[in-house]
Image (cartoon, rainbow, N blue to C red):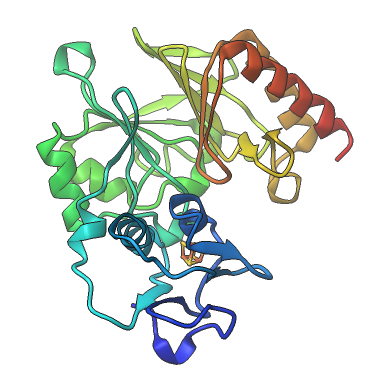
Length: 291
Ligand code: SF4
């Protein structure tokens, strides 16, 4: 729960506020960009919600905030935010909300599919929050859990315990240690099922993988994201824990694939044609050489 006593003085006056426990994960700014902005490595409320829709977006940010750093002075029905998750992104792909602090607020996603098409897939781990668990249960549960890398595993054990799902992760990021059921090795891409491919992309961590769904949705963990500032794709040089040179090689290998969506753990989501995404990926590869 956010504390009014810790309210950042940079917030505009009014109902919603961010307190000093903010870890600058960017989730609120992405969910409600008209309400929250960045200010010196924290988020602040720069515009108080005025309409129902703006209040709903602010409440969704409050629910998603991994550190409970967003608060209100007035009482609001929390279900305005809670019930909005999982939030549809496109087709059968959802953003889970309920970002986990242990993964520094990384975003997680849900693919909803009939059982005969492979069943539902959770990509990286949201907080194991009762309200979200019930919603996902009502949407068909989780058959498979894809873990991009070791930083974003959060509550994976509790999700696996609840839904008896098969977890997928690379051995070089400690999959065996985490008790993962399907452990990948090496650097060859592997088909998980007809529509899903696991692509090892060492760099950010040694065992990082991205997951491609239907040659359209690329779940990128901390390997690749969209940057509004660059208006292009980026990788995170200052958060590259294993090898920047290796990450550049991994990025080049992604040129072999078509995708229209980039769905990262950190950084911004982006959608464009496969041709424009490939162009942005080439631009990213060139830009990485300068970092
Ligand atoms: S979601 Fe929470 S932790 Fe993340 S930037 Fe916003 S206030 Fe800070």
